[in-house]
Image 1: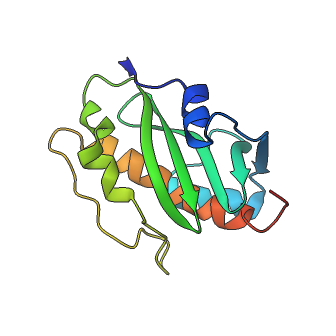
Image 2: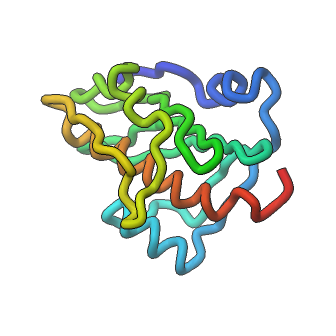
Length: 154
């Protein structure tokens, strides 16, 4: 297990020391259905917090790798992923997903018309479930970001 960056520190880094107040997106029936389709299971919560400045959002989200949640910070700008960062990794295997050689693959990724990412993400031997979890989170955040940006002042 490793805490690589505290969520508060991630937000301060993303927003140059001055993060905006958090917003929340309620997972209404239609959003819940979309998120469930992406994750392959119903979401564990009824709402997700995000931080928004202009058309740029930051999300701190979790998904189970094999048995335990992986806490990930994802920044989206203009409908494309700006960065992915593993903040807390609790599994005994698959920690390699925290490294830039993996997370950098997501830079500038967007959703394709079929709801997948517009690029393939290379897996890591021994970390398949962690790779899958981070990829699902990236897709979910892009999906939710498209419903948040432009819907309220920021």
